[in-house]
Each structure stands twice: as C-alpha cells, then as structure tokens.
Length: 169
Image (cartoon, rainbow, N blue to C red; front, side, top):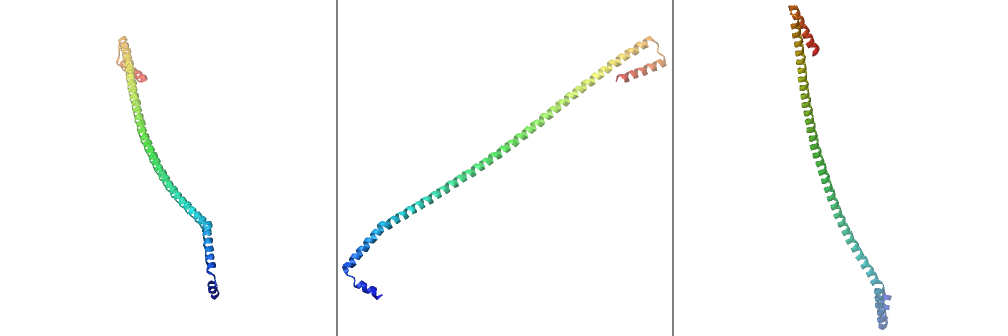
C-alpha cells in the first residue's frame, strides 16, 4: 500500500488535473455513447412491457366480456328452448284432447246412427210381420168362409197359421 500513496504524492498537480479532465471526458463520452443509448433501450423496453401488460389486461377484460356475453346468450337460448318445449307440450296436449273429443263425438254419432238404423229396421220388420199376419188372417178367413169349420179343422187351421208365422219370422 505504501507504493500507491507514494505514487499519489509524487504526481504533479498539472498532470493530476489533466488526468482528471481526461477521466471526466471519458466518463462523459461513455455516458453519451453508452449509458444514454442503454438507458434509452431500457426505457423503450419498459414502455413496451407496460404497453404489453396493458394490452394483455385489455384483452383479458375483452375476453371476460365475451365470455359473459356467451354465457348470457347460452342462458337465453336454453330458456328459449325450454319455452319452445313447454309450448310444444301444451300444444300437443291440447291437440290430443281435441282428437279424443272428436273421436268420442264421432263414436257417439255412429252409435246414434246405428241405433236409429236398428230401430228403423225393427220397425220395418214389425210392419212386414204385421202385413204377413194380416195376409194370413185374410187367407184363413177366406178358407173359413169357403168351408164350414169343424173342431178338427179349426185346430188344423190354427196349427197351420202358427207354422206360417214361424216360417215368416
């Protein structure tokens, strides 16, 4: 260490001033040529990083908004689908009830028509039977008038009349 102190003490003040000026000039040149561009690059990088962070935050906010809109749209679509299904079920139930009522009405009309037709056919059959019975009674009466009836003839005529009525029905 002694050599360093001795070298400092032996330095000439004019040399010392020149060396100091040289040092300041070197520092100034280094600062201008090296430190200022490095600081400028660092500042630009910091600004770019800040801009990227801000852009990422904005993109994240936009993504969250899009996600919220998507979820809302999905909820709306699901609600609309449920509404459509409910409406379809109600419509199907109403239509089913209408079809059942229509079928019941048609069945009732067919039954009424069949009953009316059956009653008419029965009335027709009764009228035909009456006509036949009347015709047979006239035949019997004409036969009775043609001949005098004995007890055996009377029984035979009644049996014949019963057979004719049985054949006619």
